[in-house]
Image (cartoon, rainbow, N blue to C red):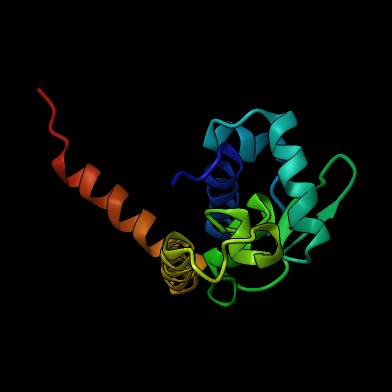
Length: 148
């Protein structure tokens, strides 16, 4: 099972907002540049995050985006479900009426367990956790660098 580009880019974009939470509003251009995401693609994701209430936007010369809550109050599961539209590996997990084999299908039971495990992991990670992970990763890179 793979996350789509929406999920991967959505996580990176919201991480950028979390990294800059204290700074306030960050422009779409800055997010796109820092995370290597096309502005037009990013704009569509940000629209979904604004509509869901995780992000607020402002227009104008100094406009941009910011989180509506502190990074510690937003879970990665929320972001992924908004930009991906859910984490269900197969449609029948969310809608059993799609399949006439639901009562006898063992693979559906496995897909339900997979969805539950994915949501548990994604729900256990806040944006603040991601910020701290990012800082640790960057500090490791800096300590490993040497100059000749």
